[in-house]
Image (cartoon, rainbow, N blue to C red; front, top):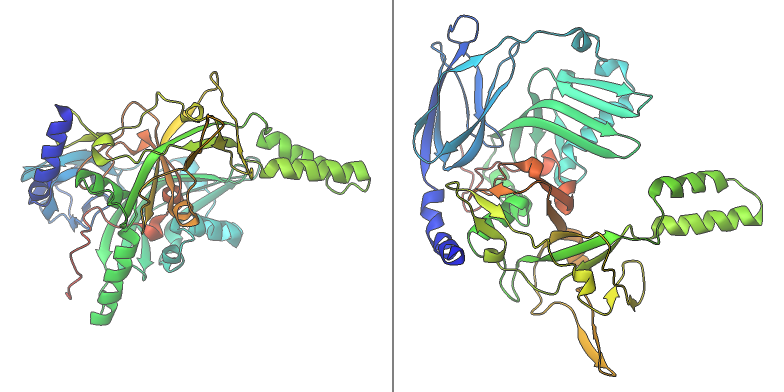
Length: 446
């Protein structure tokens, strides 16, 4: 029954999804309820933005239906955020902004000028990205960025005192980004950041707008937003045509590979040694560093949209589906182990395994995944081996909490529940498009 309802939804989604509405409200000061003028009001990750008038009133027009985060920001006040569901014209209750008390820690935080330029460059590289779109983006007002580097922990932290203005000449946007928290750990090379962004289109001539249209379409094609919209439109792939290839990925830890910490410790201890045993040991541990951390199998079943999306009891919200019950490593007698030249017999009934969705966007989708043959009546079907093009665009999606919920705009409403790896995880602000971007809508002159 759910599958039938989902199929009906696929056919009826478009008219409702592209309906447009208005969002209105008032912003006042917490202390005395007096109206606040010139407060920035915007919908996070969109181009819907405005400022309050002298009465504290605001209106956001032409908002597509969907689930959003409304952001209210003004220098000297705490940033306010609230989830809103737009399915008709709505008026939000009066929003009260509280003045921000500046703590001693904030006063004493290290300003950018006092840090080596390498930390500012590191921040810019991580926040904008190193893709071709990221490299064409620049921060116009770096003085609003507050940096702090903890030498003992090797951790770089940052936030902004006001909107950080990012000019993306590749995609034709100016981003107003309010960075709440940024952290980069040099030891682990892991980064995390939380912020709110408003998109504004740059002004340009006809030739520039034509280029921006093409580049935006390039950034959109194969993106996470494109994927979820394709799932909702029931058109994730067409055999022998361009589209998303989706399958189930199973990983278990490679029990033959020691932990990174041990490997790097051994490499440091044997580096610089002159004895033959030192050189042999260094070569061995360098070899271990190159070994895959996981034994991984990509199932040969191509998944369809109705196998990925699931209806929920919340109107307009759908849940991501991932089969977490089957250890696909045990499905075949022989599998391809990363880093090995030949397939190997590798089964483990007691190993803990993790299943994810393997998603890649390709120009030519194969009719069948994997290869099979029989020899001496012994089944020898290999797991799916992606091409170089598939690997380059491949992402892994896994569920951290119980459910990952998304709407018809391609918006994940609880992003902390979704873990992304590989291609999508590498994208930064320089690759970002607004939620309200529609690929068939050209940029017009103002």
